[in-house]
Length: 426
Image (cartoon, rainbow, N blue to C red; front, side, top):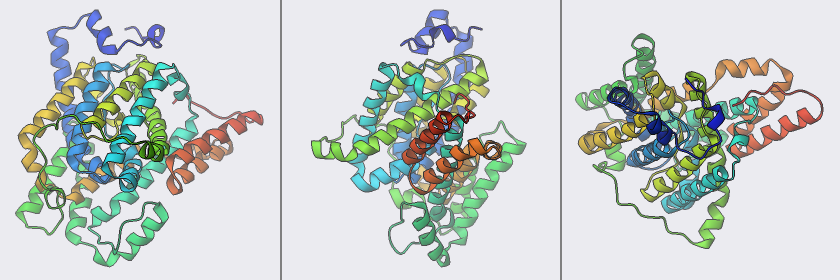
């Protein structure tokens, strides 16, 4: 099997390459099964990420459908699955809170344009070489930040005012709200997480997240548990995609959202190419980094037009796609089609999903995305630790962009001072 190294720089979508190589009924059957498997995973996860990001759950589905289709159709990886990602939760929530929905959609659109420009300029290969301790540090920092953001819904806490954004004030406010803890919500949330972990251990081929969400919803409904649900907070989920509509643009708003758009762009580029790199390691092929960034940019522009949030390559769903037997980008396209079908058929059922159950799903995501063993390994070497720990701490306590920039600067300084920094191609 060719590894694609000689063509990795080309601006040719992998879908076109696959078509020229030949594509038969057996390939379609295999991709259809893989696409269905990924869609079952993406359905609850997309809604959970949207709710945690401070927007309505259907916007996560819009993102997975539109973004998932375009990333697979135009991308530089055969296996990449695009959609909303947990890594963006904090950035999306902060942007939505500061600039409102229109400001968020404009931020997503601008970040998409920037990703297209970065990919078209051939700079995608530079992002791939971010120092390994930086990627581990910011990934673990993001995981910790996401977990902190889920404590309120996980335990059904009622805060006296708005939930603070920064982690330390957030934890102080949540601690003060502990007397309002809802045991029903806590049981649903913790039970959902425990069931997902158990199913992954004993029945790894089953759709653990979907099963856990479904059982939590049935339990809350049958026993009349006093827990907040998607329906009680957001109302009904629409049974299809909205008509495309570009966000309102003004020069003043554009200037205000630019720093956030740059953060979206940086994280989107790193996450997407890291996910494609993981896919390369699992399959022995090579993705086209610049074509991948162009596709991610187009997907973000389209997602904003349909009212979705940030699109990026998703490591867990991409790995699921490969394990399910995917052989081409058709599986990702079909995953988007399945999600649209689910939305059309089962949208009314989503109103019964407890928010504590969605929080439980994201607790599992946090645990999975945090590279715990790798963090410990890198921390044992003082040179790696000098980059790893500040990146982690600044990502957790300040913000992701600050953490990444600080980590890269420290890595460069260490190399310049003659201390060889342990780096691995992320």
